[in-house]
Image (cartoon, rainbow, N blue to C red; front, side, top):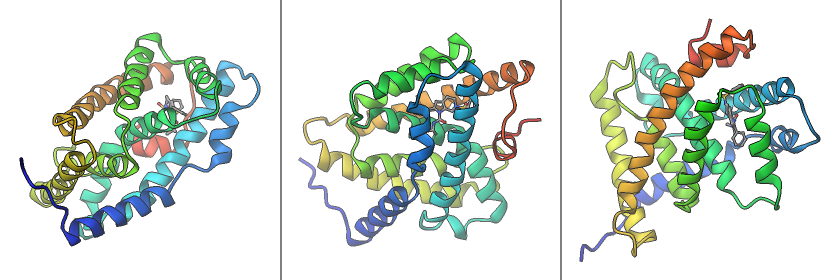
Length: 233
Ligand SMILES: CC(C)NC(=O)n1c(-c2ccccc2)cc2c1CN(S(=O)(=O)c1cccs1)CC2
């Protein structure tokens, strides 16, 4: 039986990331709006745009607190943010939905999301992903570090210093591996299941790109920040 121990440095890393993750949350009022009275598909779309935009702002702030991120090449920092924004948004959405919410809130949120002009074939994989994340019952640390690993993916488009990013990601992967062994001793495959979710995230990223084109054709407007981070228009 492997004796797993988290080093002092790794504990400091976990603390830094968890603090940043908890400090940079989407403002409650923005997500609360999603729960208010009945909206039309158009209004739901606008609300999601607002929530997604605020999530990107939160993502940028969170990323700046990832140890080592700001020492990366400046252009690589942008490439990593743009490459991971959609996946980080779906991960955060899944975490929002898997949180203990007052009964009925989840259903209302799901209803708002379903009725926002999104194509049906995108709904199924998206809600399957939310469900598969919810079933993992991730701890806060695991959520924060999994988001960090997603951001530090070396093979995003236009990343130049692949090795520098890979080194940072490997450090985070080792921390997550140890956390999984320590926090889920009965599930030896838990770490592998978490990494499997990252693969599922990439397929959602692909669906999302297709969605954007369909929204564009139906003349849906996005905010300048979403257009910038998603390379739209
Ligand atoms: C919490 C934030 C990050 N989640 C969020 O913005 N959601 C949520 C969501 C999930 C669970 C709880 C609350 C909200 C569902 C969807 C989005 C955004 N996208 S989108 O970015 O493609 C978008 C499409 C049109 C305008 S913005 C569409 C799907």
